[in-house]
Image (cartoon, rainbow, N blue to C red; front, side, top):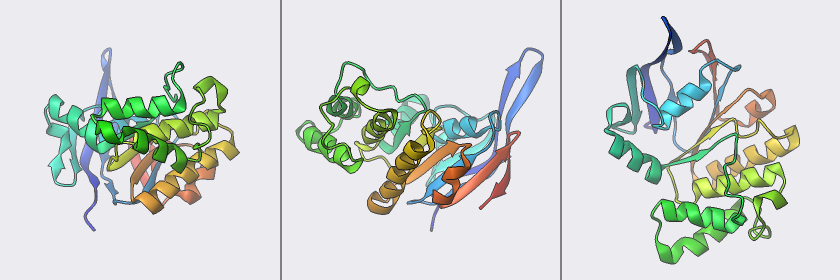
Amino acid sequence: MEPIIRTVDLCRDFPTGREVVHALKNVNISIQPGTLTILRGRSGSGKTTLINLLGALDRPTRGEIYLYDQKISEMPEKKRDELRRTNMGFVFQSVALIGLMSAYENVEFGLRVAGYDKKKRKERAEECLAFVGLGNRMNHRPHEMSGGEQQRVAIARAIAHRPKVLFADEPTAELDTQMGLQVVKVFRDLVAKEKLTVIMTTHDPNMMELADHVYTLEDGEVIDAI
């Protein structure tokens, strides 16, 4: 099966004064469609830098990134913006929900930003909140929800426009183990039922057994792949 995302000798350097930090060094990975892939590693290992490159939020210093046959590493910024808006979803450690909006309004607003069909927004927002187990909480605001529930709202918002790939950077870092496992179970359900491709970063060993593939990074290099 053709990978949905692959990299070729991917490097990212950051100049700091007179020195250069080599955050990523010749990274070659291949992500299969309809899988949950975890990028693991300690703080500073390069996993967040890598997920930002894969999600077209940053550009590599050297090397190539492909989404199917599109070389996204060399796309002009306007096309990269369009790619993120239509084909990618993002979940971050900080849920970044709008506090004055209900769960439903947060998801519906995301659909508006993505240019989703106006007539179908209500149905799709409700469908996504039900999928993440919050059908009975859609009128609650973020401050009325637990951390795990807020993260599930963020996931519903990220998947509502039907992206091909969902990127999640440390989505369980601020949650206890039980809540974190509930969030990752939502990712597993998305893979199984929606055939979505999910790529997430974590340093939590409890999450590894739920992944289809795990890439371990250390000092900017992939040192293990299972």
